[in-house]
Length: 206
Image (tube, rainbow, N blue to C red; front, side):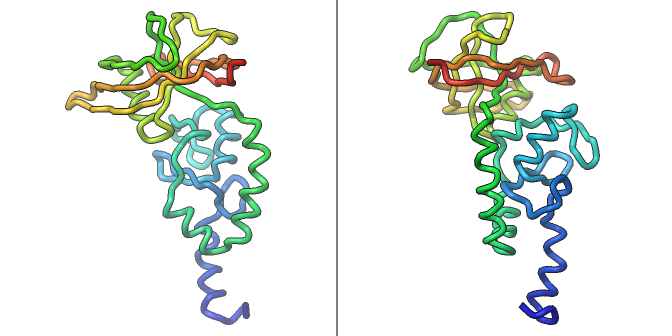
């Protein structure tokens, strides 16, 4: 492509707009967060694991599970159109690192023993669980179901897959979910600023 062609000039304008400010390369699996900034999924995961839950650019609080968040499909399409070979190379580079991730889920704590295949009907009104539902309907539509009020590493959890959710005018949520696979908690934390919303990282229970 000649340096004087219109396509080359357009690329010079667009490429910086599709550049991740963390890795300084073409955005790959772009995740847009509430402040409006967009990062590669892998870059955002690394940043949020190293630091407090803040945007790597503006430091605004970032309440997101980047491992599971939905991609910005418009920005992804633009990045692929701009340089499909580079985008595919970046996908392959990130694949091995992503294999090392174990899934992160918000935790719903309820003192009733249930089993894989059971259905779960809930009316959520606590602020932390209203926040949880807002997040999961915009990500992987799943959460961890734990029956012990003391969530600890090594405990078992069930992954609950959301089937239906209805948000009422005051923010309460009615949901229907199905409990699926058993998993083991390998990491646990309570996120700051969420009035006690627990998160856990899970691995398959064998």
